[in-house]
Image 1 (cartoon, rainbow, N blue to C red):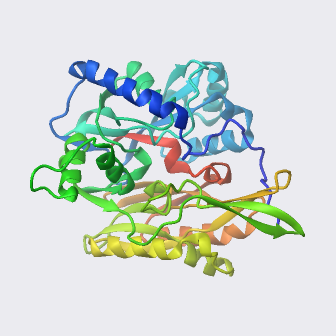
Image 2 (cartoon, rainbow, N blue to C red):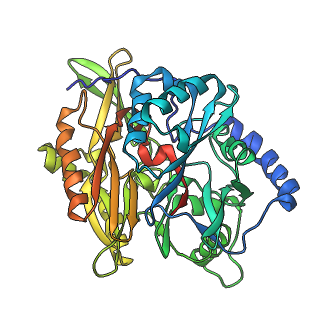
Image 3 (cartoon, rainbow, N blue to C red):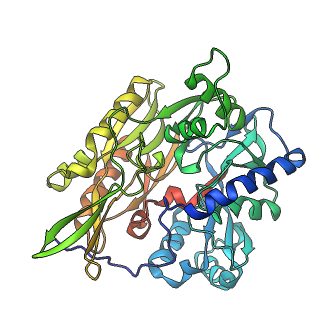
Length: 431
């Protein structure tokens, strides 16, 4: 069945997994050299502790809103909806292009949050994206005091790599660099543990950014290197699958008597051990259960197909998600499976179909003692009204865990580019 976009797509919108391939090789050495030159001037943390993904109340969040957001209702509406639904005590740091400052001010006035916002203007030539989550981690000294952006040795979207520098220069936020490869969306932080997608530490090993000491296993070396740079106190657990994960590919099929091309496994590089390039797209932390076990929701394409009454697509990679869920359970998690629908968007002009996951796992979570809330992206809109069923099933699952659920706006325009609400913000502090 033909499924076209039910919104006006922003051509400036960059898929979250896209790399500036030509520029990475050229700038990696230059930026690494610059980091070495200025490292002596940077603050250091003796006991870095990452800001949690789910534990504690929402306090201060970073949003990055490039000028094109305000030209397309499908994107601007998501932010406006988010401002109206997040807690009234949450504050925001917003990076916006100077040319869009007036548009932002008008939005903040409409939703009545202007007094809780610090706005940072950026020049138009800095073409940062909406993906505020990815270009850095955020740590504090032993979990208190000022927050520090922690930038990796290299970041594939080069102008997003400058977000932390621009924001830190104009706020009370600090900044330091770690000679490791990581991205914020591939990290999830609990209370006494944190999860790291296994692709990035293995890449750091391959690049020689650190090496096992004499008699040290690669796993122990990963724990040592990433612990000293990002979080010295919490237990580090890696997320990945030992089953073969397919790489991004194209294949032809016939639609209405015509030959089309479809894109599968978007964002998956050769050799990946993750079914999506960031774990925040398919794993959600949800506090602890009555037995004290950490709860992890793991997306389930098979369950989504059952809820929708449809056949499971072979390229949904259901066995890989099952394998990751099993491994988390073996590590002591109470694992809950939730629907993860595999959907597509058609381009009749190009005769091309793009598959992507309509993820509700990419959510905002607040587990603050007895108070528990979650804000879920929704997808039962426009060309996909049937996804109201999976939206409601995801809501039911969270409510069964004791959470108050906020249903957010239509996130198809973001999920099509492999991101959702967790990707367009960065937690700076938790209360």
